[in-house]
Image (cartoon, rainbow, N blue to C red):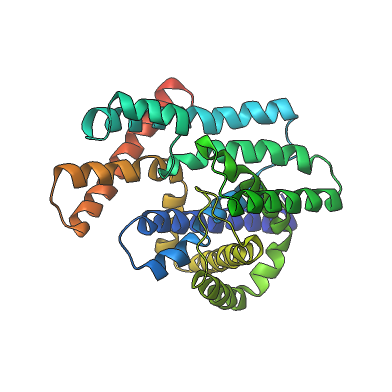
Length: 316
């Protein structure tokens, strides 16, 4: 490998590192966003923390690697299989340990899906990726942009008329638009590296201003006004990306966020139900409760790795 190839290889690795850092920041903000923080802070976080995951999926996906059938098979294995496993865990806890559980909750889950529990994100992401595969497969940028705008407007229409479909299906059009935006955003990495300080400051300002007037909630497809909320989402994501790139200079802090970003499935799947159980059965303060959450998630991470290694397939 010559010097030029070394530089390229190093650059690609660094990009993946800051992307993991960004995902780590976003998943921590997801946990924080579901606590009793002031509404102004919550609105700021919600403006971009979930859009970041859709955009990074569009950014990181290799759209040319597989046929449509191969793509669906791969995403089913990597997304739907773990989703089913985590869903069974949460369902068992809900039905057996919590007063609102039992058969009535199971029936509600079958007909409505996860609603406000973060696991809603996985099937929406899966469908959004599959639709994006077809649209990006058109090859022509004008057609892809047209598809993206059409889906965003469809999401806005569903939001405006408050059409809520079971299993968060009404969120799919806007989520797909964000995935496609991620596909295009990958081309801007050079500008982000060059102007990351400016982007971070401007991104914070724009996101803060928009979040003072509007709240984005992709789970319940609250995406109106779609243009302003998308600007806020992109600004917040760009801010997080730029901040993550700067964090790489602080080796140990960056490594911590990177590790968290590599375990987003566990945090997304289990953090809320662990907190709910702790609130139900203990009277612990917030600090102790979230300290136990961190310990439980770390423990489950090692259990998950052992199970996946033993079975030779990622089921968690």
